[in-house]
Image 1 (cartoon, rainbow, N blue to C red):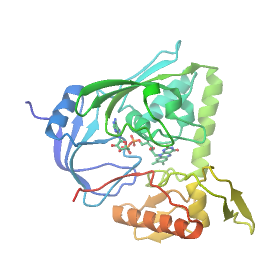
Image 2 (image 1 turned 90 degrees about the vertical axis):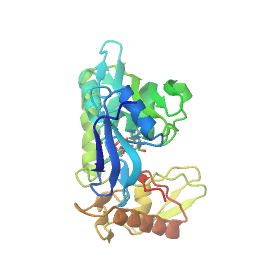
Image 3 (image 1 turned 180 degrees about the horizontal axis):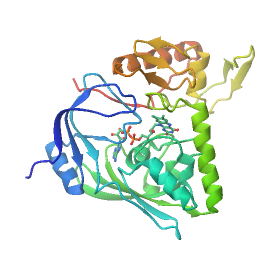
Image 4 (image 1 turned 45 degrees about the vertical axis):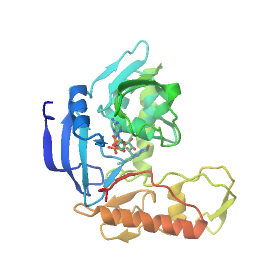
Length: 309
Ligand SMILES: Cc1cc2nc3c(=O)[nH]c(=O)nc-3n(C[C@H](O)[C@H](O)[C@H](O)COP(=O)(O)OP(=O)(O)OC[C@H]3O[C@@H](n4cnc5c(N)ncnc54)[C@H](O)[C@@H]3O)c2cc1C
């Protein structure tokens, strides 16, 4: 068996938090053959996307970390006439969103304004108030760790809120069906959503976006509205985790090198040179205060990598 190319020992793992531990071994996979070699080396390998929804504990990880790379995994093919788009799993989502919007294809512009690879966005079913990536996805190409290449139709994937059920697969590419539309209307929506993100979230700080999923409540919940009154939420409604963290009094709370953002309470930001343990401890503090104040359990949205015991 040939050796895996581009392998680095004791390599930094690049994440948008900018803190956290290293990989004992990290490699770039530029083709499906590289991926098969990597799987042979470590069937439990971890896939690194853009690192935009990831925090790696300060001790790092022992498993082989694999980043998909060009030329095998970053292509973007757009058919402006039919709206059919195929993208490699390592293609950058913002570039895909911009290019399809420029061609007047509607569907992906709702994902404007956040960093991701196509593969990472599918695994997380990334999205927000304007829609999720699963809405216009038609097909996923992946490697099953045991059985090799698989093709999954959209209807076979159990997408839910920030979940896809695909995290054990290695996504290699995806197809989307977009809708040819008035190019200036699509570009306008793209710009408006970017602007909304810029004004409501601290996009330039070191973070992974929202740390917690918005929980669905199972009983009537009354929380202060911040102006002396109260808001009432009905059972079955999904409530903003940022609102709960804010109303639990956490905005601006600092622990070591980590801070609950004043701008958006579901963003925890990390100082340059800070520690992942501070971010993780502050997540525990925020979740604990929300549980104490409102009896609601917050589930992390951010993926946490830890060294196995
Ligand atoms: C400023 C900022 C704003 C954000 N805003 C939003 C938002 O509005 N909506 C939203 O949903 N998210 C948001 N996020 C979070 C993040 O952008 C998304 O979750 C994104 O989809 C993560 O993609 P990634 O490529 O960075 O994945 P990573 O963070 O690298 O990985 C996330 C998980 O996906 C797995 N993975 C990655 N690629 C593959 C692959 N090819 N095959 C199999 N598994 C894979 C990883 O192993 C890991 O488990 C934001 C983040 C930041 C920093």
